[in-house]
Image (tube, rainbow, N blue to C red; front, side, top):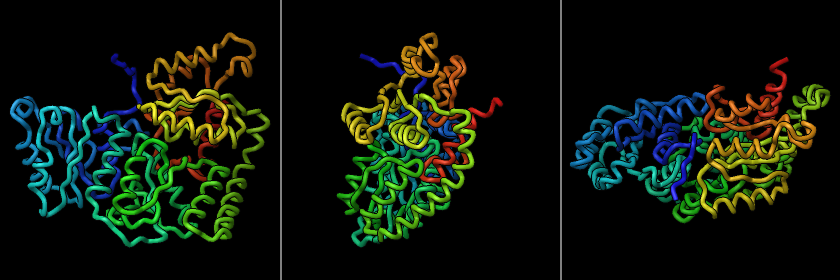
Length: 444
């Protein structure tokens, strides 16, 4: 039976691949697909992720074969060869990645064969298969990592004992990926570690090539990139650790202690960092306690986001703010095994609320209206309203129409610009608290 998704919150695998490469330093995509794919997909990522824009030779400037009816009928291999050659002549980069779309996959172009003709040339060219029937943007992220880190990069036996790699946050489709990675990097560096984030502005191509030398891969996702880090361990010998992105002091304290245990960092060093960060966090937080308590800013909440952020947001709202997250909607495309992994991770946290796997925007609205009707009992208790809604820009109409408090935190985000904003760690926890309360005081 066909499933129709109204206003989905992701793109196809090619879109995820292009967003991933757009954030990697000196990695340039070559799109082998139909004429409109590159422009439409780059626009979705550039504007839907808090207007994150694009980078060098990406977005609207990404090279593309732009196949038309002629190539669909007679094959697009010659056109691809021509595009690769012109791209190598015109663009300065350290790695070129051919990413395929639906049409070129369906007509059976020998992409790997074309790419092999450039082996040993001036700059490396590789190919990945990213048609929409391989999955959505999150799957495209995983496919891209697999192609670059596990197939292109050579094996590395010597390990740097203080080097770690961060994976799991999907560029653009996790709109706060840059700020979140930067905060985790800052904290791990305070423990004396070297950190490859790959997707933040200060990273270089050397960070990418050094990845196989890392002593640990940290994956901030229970479902995306799991197979990738497993293959990474088999190829490069680097173990992995799957955990939730920490938001706020309690979760971040726990995260740093676990990192220290895995990498055998001096416990005293960790405690010093935790004490310093908590002093700073609560030094800021206590100044806002008056408005928070006097105005009785405690709410029931619904969270509408992807699998990477749902549990971290729920944990922060409940453990740090004392709110009650009731309905936690997971909006990415997951199979039954992935859903079960998320349920297990959620249950392990002993959090309130219920995970609801729903991708369709209209059905999310219907579910919320059924669960929280405005005409039942007391607004704060029996009806769980006024509800605080953490979602995407797609929820704005619902929130305004029903008088709900609302903050956009998940893709697509059209009503705020995101530059270096992030919600992870200690500073990110303050940012999230600030943004949540700003919604409440803005009408005053």
